[in-house]
Image (tube, rainbow, N blue to C red; front, side):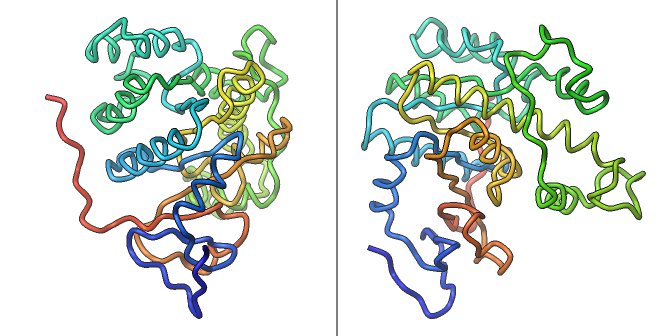
Length: 285
């Protein structure tokens, strides 16, 4: 059931379909999401309330189907054996964080993410490493994809070229990029380096999700990915479509009703309005 509204009314703890500008029934939304191959959950990395929301969605999807896996931007592909060992109970939490090189590869407080990691372990849900070798991002940004030897591609294929709309989006959210981009535009060749680097991450998440689907590691993969890689169908959704993955959906959160620019079909499948005064992450100490 979808509830019509005369104006865009989006109270706290409700879901909004930005294309239809209507509130959406949560059970119906979950049923629709369970039919996808990929459901991507955007985040701001330091927001504990968003990570609790992600956990709730993972749990809800598991109630609809058992063949899910959860993929994480936080882990490069080389650490997949560590994630596998965590799921099978071969290590405790301190050893897991040590072996996963948490303080090096990510650095945000592990307490933000541990509830999701525990959920995966306790429910037997596979965890997937979606990221790539960080030096690859730097080198492609600086020199371009063709300058990198095949053996250093970390299993990735080249990203589909960014659209002008994506360049404009990246230019806007970075306030024009580094200082030397002042008085230039998103179309400037000087912005290419940043765009190329961003697209390596976009493509890495997409390639590793697509590979996991093709290898039958799961029927539905939930991606825990930064919001800037997902909004408006740019970034990872765009690269997934290039890889032939059409059954996908993006869910995002907001702190206040969406502005008019986000009330469009490609912004997200649905947006959850978070309650105010969220609780900060508990300390791991």
